Image (cartoon, rainbow, N blue to C red; front, top):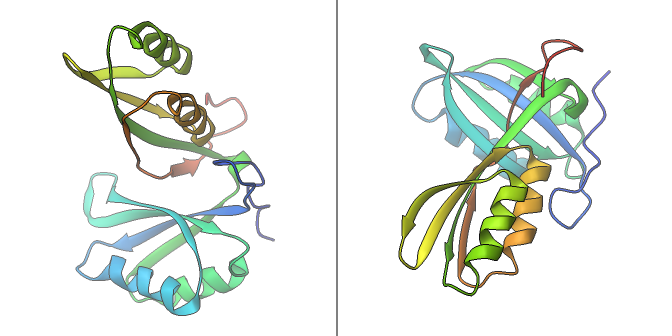
Length: 179
């Protein structure tokens, strides 16, 4: 039985997502084959993140957040499993996973908005990572919901350049594991 999809709000629209953690051989063309599979089948990828897995350069971990409305999960997993370089696929239910995302934003600052911006960043737990006389670049590594919240809070500032990485996730270690 597959886990229930995420039913929360990731931006302003309710969505249903599944998180797939796919261990693949780190070879040229693997990501293109995965993306091609999704495109050919009309499956919607909400978020995609790839990095080397653990300390083994031989494998990479691909975290795919899939729109559960675009195709049945079993069909997605079945198609992924047919790809030659796919080693393992794990469907992570949000309740059983630790999810994080990185948000970077550059905001134009002046004396009129500086205090308000600093309050917004402090409330979100964001850090300033770069500064010049007229702008700051901030970072928040947190849950998708906390990144959504900061993104909404930054809408009140003009001249914001914002980028988010997409989710990465791993299974929870147990009931007592910290978030």
